[in-house]
Image 1 (tube, rainbow, N blue to C red):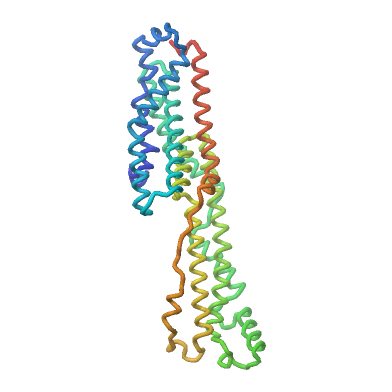
Image 2 (spheres, helix red, strand yellow):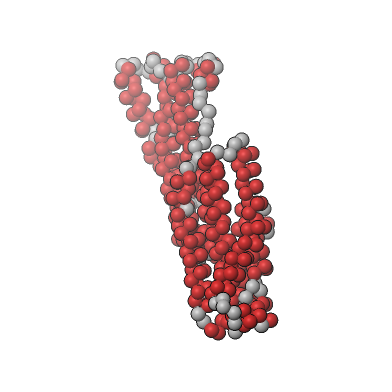
Length: 356
């Protein structure tokens, strides 16, 4: 369990509840075959498909009786402690999350009942289902992650920083006194104000250089950062596509999107904080540029009201519509799993040898 990370409600619902469904439901049909009860039931008016659907409904109801109160209490209490209230948006998110897990649990139940129906014994059904759990929880997610990293290779931290430094040296390096960009900038500034030295400028030349350097640095960083984010999005797209082969990947992506812990929310927070940092830095440079003289500037001070007027950072989370749009493929994958599950049950019910 330590390899899956910190134990959380999502981990319990995504990993452990399917395992519980397996241990409760593996003898659902296979056990009836072993003790001969299945033949007696099929002699009644109910068809084999009716029996399979009934077992599916019963197993689903048992799971929800166990976990629905726990899910609702956890989500509402957690939402209240995080925001101090339970608004309309949080209630809508909770409703969609619960509905998503309902579809996920139903797909697992359909899979368990289907495997139990095609197995000759309960032991055979249990072995196949446990192997399937290992396949869905460990093998496929790890394979999808590895495949995404191979198809869309991201640069390491050293290569990322070196690429920025190399491009920065071409556009302008404020620490290099012989840099052609800043030398031309200095000449244009002196010509604009008609003076022959930076001390005679009506503004702080050091602050002007820092402001220009900050603009160049931030522009280059954002360009390379956006390119890196694009690579990670491509890697995540591979895992998202594997949701059609693994319901665990589908519900994991969907749950993270609706909870605001997905990659899009993470990058949105990074971009907003970087924009806030840049704007605050430029405000400081503007104060330095206009309020502090170039000569002996380290010994001068400005009023505290400049800092009090600085706005606080406020994160704007993604909307529910944006989350659902990003999780559209995962939601479609879950629906496909449910439809495929009912289709598989119907196919099994039409084959005589699966009833023996």
